Amino acid sequence: MNKQWDVIVIGGGAAGFFSAITCAETSGKRVLILEKTAHVLGKVKISGGGRCNVTHACFEPKPLTAHYPRGGRSLIGPFHRFGASDTVEWFEQRGVTLKTEADGRMFPITDNSQTIIDTLTHAARAAGIKVQASTGVQTISANDHFSLTTNKDETLTADHIIIATGGTRLAAGARLAEALGHQLIPNAPSLFAFNIADARTDDLPGVSVPLAEVSVDGMKLKATGPLLITHHGLSGPGILKLSAWGARDLHDRDYRFHIKINWLPNIKVAELESKLVSKRQTWGKRRVRGHCPFEAIPKRLWDRLCEAAGISTDTIWSQLGKEPTHKLITELNAGSFQVSGKSINKDEFVTCGGVKLKDVNLKTMESKLQPGLYFAGEVLDIDGITGGFNFQNAWTSGYLAGTAIADI
Ligand SMILES: Cc1cc2nc3c(=O)[nH]c(=O)nc-3n(C[C@H](O)[C@H](O)[C@H](O)COP(=O)(O)OP(=O)(O)OC[C@H]3O[C@@H](n4cnc5c(N)ncnc54)[C@H](O)[C@@H]3O)c2cc1C
Image (cartoon, rainbow, N blue to C red):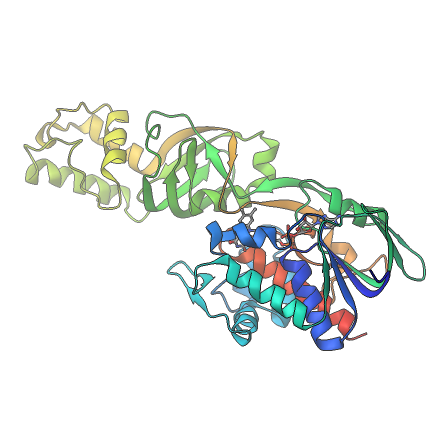
């Protein structure tokens, strides 16, 4: 293999491919992608439950930045240069139509992440990019050009380097940046589910509510969204959002804290009360636990919330006294749960932390400390909530790095 390259991209993920393609397509520079695992674009493959949530239908830069618990403010300029609509157009131009789901997430109409992989690998091939898998970069040194050593005992040189090694959980890729003088913000998991052992949710996996509000006791942390009961506790967009915004604080609490759940955030307490009181008359002889007056609450969950409010299985609506009514209202709009750990969310997980943004020129993604060194994707201290925002960061930063090198 050729040992001298114009550009070497370290990491064959979304950001690595996007930066390489952008650079090679517009400049004709000789670009090499080095990927340490046997397969490139591994995370794209498993992303979005195998469907790849490519981006989010949020086309204005400012509102888009609001979906990034870390790095959002820094992304305003980058999103002006390459935002979600540019992503849609980029894929559209290569024959991939994206569809928007009700919650704004955008997927290929094929509902298959392989479509995105095929598009990226085809574009890379067409642009003459060389991709070498099973090749991990172990060291980088910088003189008048960059020298890289790999696990295959090769030494390669390049005029420009893009570090696109992904999340810093295993830190190895980011250590390359550290060796070139960059500071790493310590990592912590983001987008995780909550472990909860509680009679109200035990053995109800798969039960969900369309909209709930979850807040963490003693912290200014609150999120709304769909909630899903799992084998180990709670997940769903509402929980994942909370985990992303609270990634650092919840890590500091060793994932032990109390939450309050409002299962019906759009219904005020007075309204809840009058609904329950009215059912005492209209449903007088029916069993309370067998008849839920709220469409959004699944029957099995309703039964558990009633049980927690001390309502016995044979209590009928006309017998529902003041105290259990109030207890039930509390269960419905401020049920307290103890979280005792976290679980990986199988659909999407990311790490927060990474290369400190202060040392990176966010117009070009070039290092301010080492000319010729660029960054793209999750290796940067930027992370989004679930919904396509993490890939958007990979496309945007990859595009900026690729364009900047192409323009040299
Ligand atoms: C299960 C799952 C599902 C997800 N689903 C979505 C989704 O639907 N939508 C969304 O927006 N986000 C999703 N994400 C997050 C998203 O996948 C990441 O934010 C995104 O992949 C980051 O892209 P990247 O190129 O920066 O890093 P990666 O995709 O992690 O790629 C980095 C690559 O660099 C390689 N590498 C690391 N070190 C070296 C080295 N020293 N030498 C050579 N190669 C190296 C790695 O092997 C890897 O292939 C998901 C994440 C997971 C884990």
